[in-house]
Image (cartoon, rainbow, N blue to C red; front, side):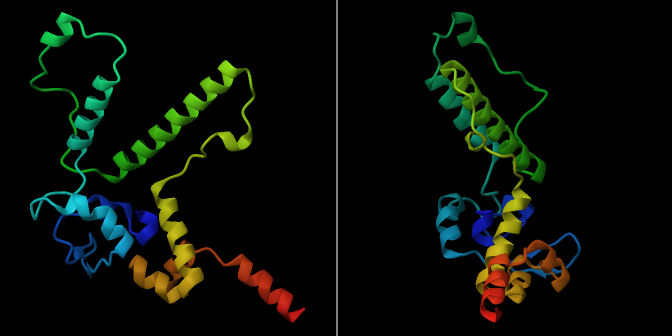
Length: 190
């Protein structure tokens, strides 16, 4: 979804049903435009109360636990079935995701997939090729990628408008130069 809009991670994680505008930490109000494709992705999450967060960690954790139970290999023992939840657990899911939890979820998922691929390759007795493992990345890299794509298609001023930058120099840092365009220019001028 970040690549569909180039939004800051914190903006996406704090999406609530009311999407009029968002007040930034620094004071100015920022109007957030959401593309039709991103709206299609968000639509199921918008069917909540006006002030409810669209993405709730507790819901995700409940779904994860249901899937774990369904895929359980050994039967549950009577002791496990009678076990009660702690009144005050050391950790419980928050009301909404934060930047760090989102980044950690991505990192953990990549680590799990890579570990599984390594185990499978080891069992098969085959070495892993460079492209077999998923490279580590961060959510902010998606924002940079979106900025680069927007710059290629619509220009630098569009990057500034979509990403909500106050100064063009910030947009220049986010959007990489179009090297293909530079190569084409050099081909044309000989």
